[in-house]
Every structure is written in structure tokens, then in C-alpha cells.
Amino acid sequence: MPLLETMIEVAKPWAKFYSKSHVAQGVIMFAHIGGMLWGGGLAVSADRSVWKLRRAGAEERARLLAEIDRLHVPVVVGLIIASLSGVLLFVADLETYGTSFLFWGKMAAFALLLVNGRWLQVQEQRMQKASGLIAGRWGALTIASWASMTLWFVVALGGVLLKNA
Image (cartoon, rainbow, N blue to C red):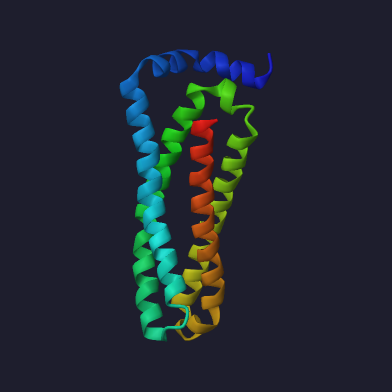
């Protein structure tokens, strides 16, 4: 039996429960959107600040870096909530999502978002260690922040398109 068919068979009890429970559907969709709103909202706000301070002085940038450093845990919590609820949504309809190019495109954008988030964090850490190089490295951080904002919205768009497909 192919992998997808096996997964569909294993997930049948969950899919059946989910399809009949409006409460489960509402709670899981809320967790998914809420996790994205929480993590993405904080991240996009920080990304906007990076863009806004691209011409600011070193002291303002250093303060922003310290603030952004404190945001990583809440953003990751939002991502975890969105990911866990996303897995439950995926498993509830494996037949549809398992073969959907739109779904896998959203997952590719999500993977890029995670990779970019790590790259952004590395750039921040480098600047914090070498405070005299903040101005010289701000361009890389600005590019990573722009990519982050773009990817958050691409992932959100993918979710909307999937819901309406």
C-alpha cells in the first residue's frame, strides 16, 4: 500500500471525528490562525522596525536588537501552535492536502520562512557580539527582515487559498 494511502487509513478516526465536530474545527482553526497572528504579528512588527531604523544611529539599532532578541521565544511559540494545529488540519484531510500543489507550495514557503528566521537570528547575534559592526551588517538584517515579511504574507495567502480551494 503506498504511503499516502497508509496515512489516510491510519488517520481515519481523527478525520471522521474532525469532520463531525464543529467545536474541534473551530478550536483547531483558531489555534492555527491565532498562532500565525501571534508569531507573525510580532515578527512582522520587528521586521518593520528593522526597515524603519535602517538609517538610524548605532544606539537606536542596538536597542532594537535587544528588543528583537526578546521576541524570538514568543514568535517560536506562535510557530509551534500554528504548526501543531496545521498538522491536525493536514491529517484531517490527507486525501486533499497530500496531493495538493498549493499545500506543498505553502509548506515550501513555510520552510523558507523558518530558514530565513534562523538566518535573521544569526545576523542579529553577530551584530550584538561586534557592536562596532552594527552599521555594516544592518543591510543583511534588512534583507532578511524584508524576506521575513514577504514570507509571512505568502504563507498566510497560501492558507487562505487552501481554505477556499
